[in-house]
Amino acid sequence: METSWPGTWLLVSFLIFAIVGVLGAMGWSLVYSKRAAAGAEEGNAGLFWLHLVLFEVGVLGATAMMAAIGYVGGNVVATGGSAIGSAQAVATNIIPPLSNDPNSIFNDMPPVVEALFIGLALLSQLVGYLALFMTKKSAPASN
Image (cartoon, rainbow, N blue to C red; front, side):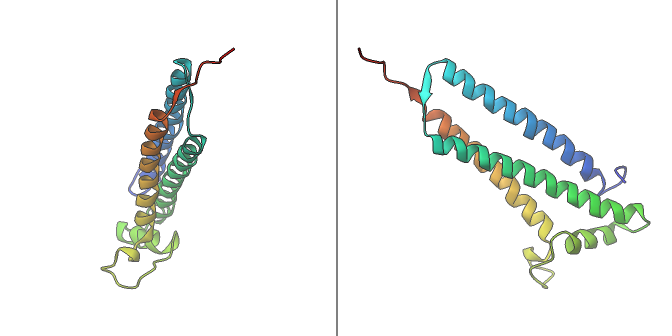
């Protein structure tokens, strides 16, 4: 099933999860720990949590949607269906269309939801940079 389109999206989703999800989270943790080691200890906790939540939801949602597209579409092709049949199965079986108009963006919802999750992951990067640059060194303790 993974050897032909759209089943290859199963492999793509795993690789993106491993690279962006695992290595990206490790990279951010290293950046935050290096910043703390340099003496920057005070920051906006809300931004740190917002960054973490947006990053996880964005990456996990995007890779899960890619895997669902690969599984549903690849299953159609693996059982003898065509690429057109697999595209129709992806459009109707994962998330039902919100519009019956074939020219509407809401007629094929999985790519729209995929794009929203990717946008959320990118937004989390901006929030992470904002949280990172808003950290400051703690005031020295006075005796």
